Length: 416
Image (cartoon, rainbow, N blue to C red; front, side, top):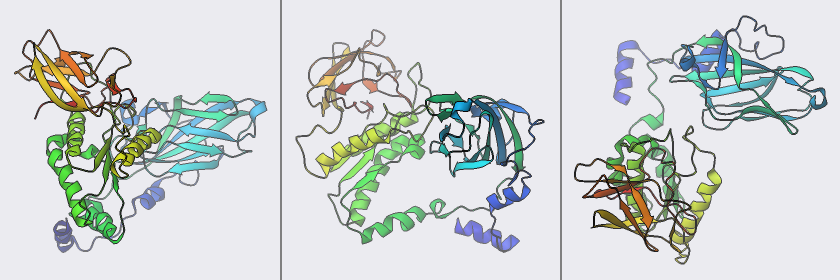
């Protein structure tokens, strides 16, 4: 990356600093104006929200775009403090109610929960203005999130027709070579190497999404990272806990290849290293959010593993069932699990299992708990089975094998 920059400088001269946000503000006729009271939106076109605006005919990718919505309020609630919820917005936003700034988020992932101060809301018509910055890719208001105003016990839905106006369209310069995170060794040198100055009790790792297209490679890569950090910190038994990828996307009705499932399986295999622990999360994510909100349950599952790995409590059931071995038996496959606690359990018929023969074509399978630590899997479509997969989808909805401590089984494949 540095050589690319040097070559560019040699040909074109030194790269001048470019403040994209400042340039957008300079070219946006609404900056400092449309957020205030009294803006005329009578000629603004309509759009139905939530959703991605490019899916709705608005060909806009980089810059600022404004959205306007009115809602009615009863006189009895006028002047009350309220909450404005704007779901999740890609990429960043600033929100105004009746000309008053109520909040902003500078990147796409956090939920938008803004407080409307006392005295801002009025009886009759109230106005919401949201300015959104998009920096490439599809911008929009993520679906199936809350878009509402909460006043007292009343919830006012603000989905549906909004009006919009493009503020300024400005593509980032092609000479932007990115920050340290995009340079070889950048993340390590800036974030990991400094850790060596501190006494570290253990590590919690929450990552892997960008490796989902290379799950098989991640099997070794992730183990190498753990071993390397232990070497760098001179702690060969350093506790290393990690969160398996949560569910994301629309569930598939038929068995499919899944990069996320392959990566989850690679993460599971890192448990082959000593002093490691994994929190399963495929059952507590959200189909439309790569950063799901239920962090409390993720933290609880990590805390259970920390009790075992970092503090030596071997009597605690700290994780759900883990695939251990398989045996072909009379046209079915018998699976054995570890970490079963008081025993394997499902709250209904077992779901989420797939089975395949020598042709490698997986089909949905029947499955039943046979004992405290075994599950039998079979299908009439596969006479001579050789492999089983469980919870093998980006979003494996319905997969329900647990132990009686209510901790979910990890997704897995019996394939090498």
